[in-house]
Length: 110
Image 1 (spheres, rainbow, N blue to C red):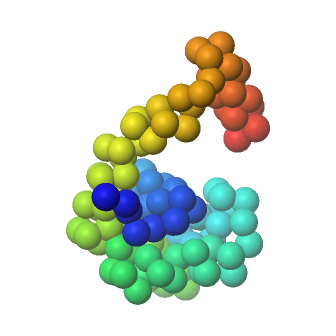
Image 2 (cartoon, rainbow, N blue to C red):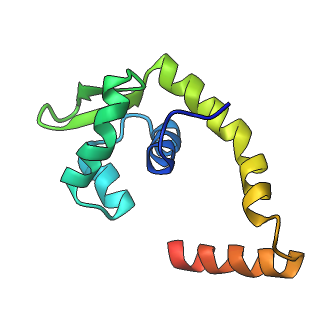
Image 3 (cartoon, rainbow, N blue to C red):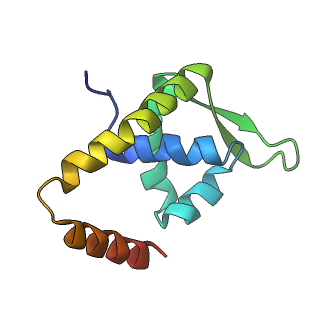
């Protein structure tokens, strides 16, 4: 059974799970994307009630993001499937090639 979110949306859910209450501005900066791109990616998650927006209790001008219970359940499913997905993606690589690829990704992401 497939999961009805894009890889980018799945990544957003994982980040929101690890950073509850992050502001939209902080999330855009964390992802190194422009705020309009974030809004475009977030919109389907908001419409599906996986994510909710709230006004910050610290700064009323800021909007914070939180997973709903449905969003957390979907995120838990994504987390449970990640090892299997990673194994499928890396299946045609030798152990040495896998390690090299993961090392390069770590360097590129940092």
